[in-house]
Image (spheres, rainbow, N blue to C red):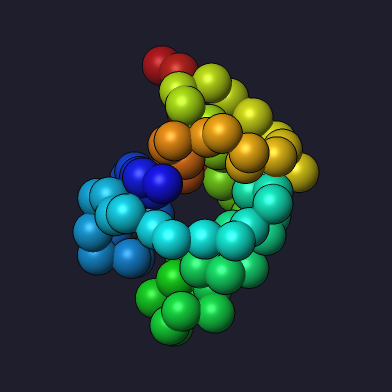
Length: 81
């Protein structure tokens, strides 16, 4: 699946997107797999309460299932102004 990173998440990981092979069942499982990759992922996902996630461009929760999902995007909450 395609995993996209935006704003400071992208800055910490160092890439805007990547193709990820995963056996994760939920978004939380995917985060655990990503954090185990290397330190930059661990830093980016250290506090998931500071992140939002979208599955195939629809906002979702971290306990959402990944079955059939083609794209996962991680980004900080948006602020208006």
